[in-house]
Image 1 (cartoon, rainbow, N blue to C red):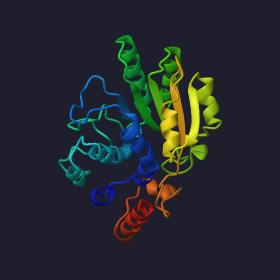
Image 2: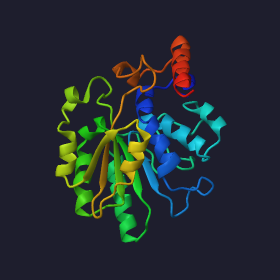
Image 3: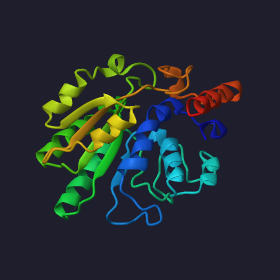
Image 4: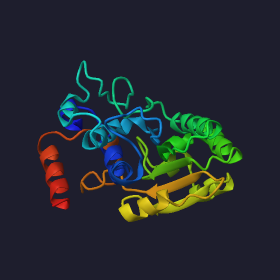
Length: 252
């Protein structure tokens, strides 16, 4: 998708591929043939620039046809570069302007509590967007309102668009910050499916759950891993062939 569309953010997409696979394959409660089912869990991709990853997960889960993925980033397509809910089954909220996913998710979780609904609200956000003050307001809000129906997964790949998170605006001690705000925090390997599944089910009564998923930007493609270059660049020609070959061999 990113190659044919000439779009980018492939590094950010690959860092969350395992997380999306676990969410859509095991954790989320949904009905692809009834995307507005009231009992469904809600999922927001706050790091909307990795939208191609969600589109792929939606296609694999039966929300949209696989063939539709070929239209990603094309003129006239609703599979935009940043994830959009417009005309896309299974997308709850359009994102891309960083720092909005968590505040919206806390509102959804509070509404579910008020209405005595049993679904869970999940939000997947980047570590880089934790530079945004709106996230920390939401991080205060959720424990105060005892939103134990809210699960935040943070893609901790430690890289932003042009340099590391620590050189941009230091986040450490990152886990301690979330715990200090009153969250149940679990620090895991974000590419280990068993750890991801167990973490998603490790809820504590009256506390929102924060999963710090330590990941590798560009995971699975050797020349992309931990390289800032692949935040904006898309693979073309020989790079594309080499990347596909590595990913296919890894999954063989």
